[in-house]
Length: 508
Image 1 (tube, rainbow, N blue to C red):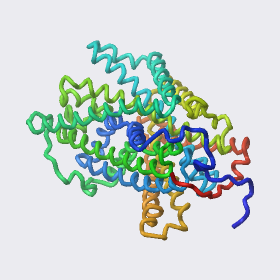
Image 2: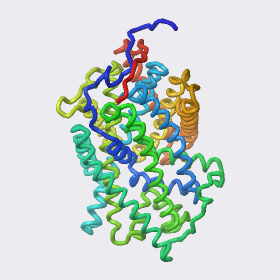
Image 3: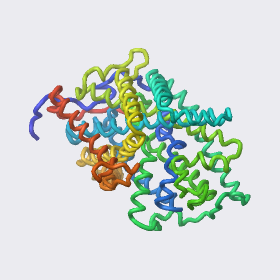
Image 4: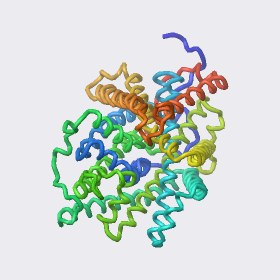
């Protein structure tokens, strides 16, 4: 083995590279609740059910299950990496450890781009449902239209982001308290919706009662590979966010074990909830393009806004409040990942040392949290003023970022454990086979999305020179990441000359 070209940085662990975070402040249940809140099931399903149904018809459950599998396989790899290197930097630290600082930096860029971009989307959705809920409560229809007023929308959005940042800044105890309430409410309303839908089907009062069929779970029944790929791309997005529980590993009780277990539990909870709600919607409404059919393009932007009334009757207002609470909860919990990633990057010298600052009182990434919310707020304000199409097409590029950094992290697990993966059957599956298959699948989805997004019909339908705006924006985000990396190399060359050395980790 050649000698390192620069200073050696030991892999971080709770006994070697404490960053000043609040140790032991989050347990398994709290981590799962925060993981579910980041995924935002009510908000996600409301926007994903319709487009997925249009792509795959009544095989919705099959796509949900198939989309869940690569996430589970990747989560197993995350779990192994966390056992060896419990570090708040997750993708950044682990990819740097396996492949070197350059790939580690770009992997972290994918995470930062995805999370900061989605913060603006979540805040925008929260604004929409905030005014919709007030309109429904007061009976004044014009209030719902306030979200179309750009100054009102922008000011409300910035206030929401500031409030979410404040909760995140105050630490895990405040975060847990808020999330227990918001997550419990949205899960109860979703289950209420599903049960109410099944009851209407049983009573014969459903819009388009569709008898249950096990064929719905057969992915090979989807009519074409193109439809299958479109459905998978959507289903991968609806599971994104579970990895937030790993970024809290330095703050968890059982740093090497609890986060990995919580990640897998989060995915299992979400896939179960998605399946129940999807079956309820599918049996009640079918997949036609009728008034309430899941294939109706007029309701696909917000399926629950259309179906809540027919399914839940006068209690439909609860669904609006559930989607509002879902987006608000995810807005707050999603801030955890970028803040802790930037904290780790500052700690190890990949960013300005200011990013490593931790609040002495709350033991949270003070500077990084403020920077994350400022960037997200500025992005939203600028894009919302320029064009809503540009804003939502930028959000569509999230799929690329998610598949990219998940895939990189999964393959980092394979490479890091390559010498010990054959020690036992369990090690082979958890350290090599599962993350390898999951990582390859997600990188395939990444390149497939890049190819598909070149089509002007992808996303909002906007184009520049015959090339889809989603593709252009995606490439712009990656180009910006590469430029930022080279700028950091110019400012902090010592980080890019480092190699990461293994140290012993002591389990709790």
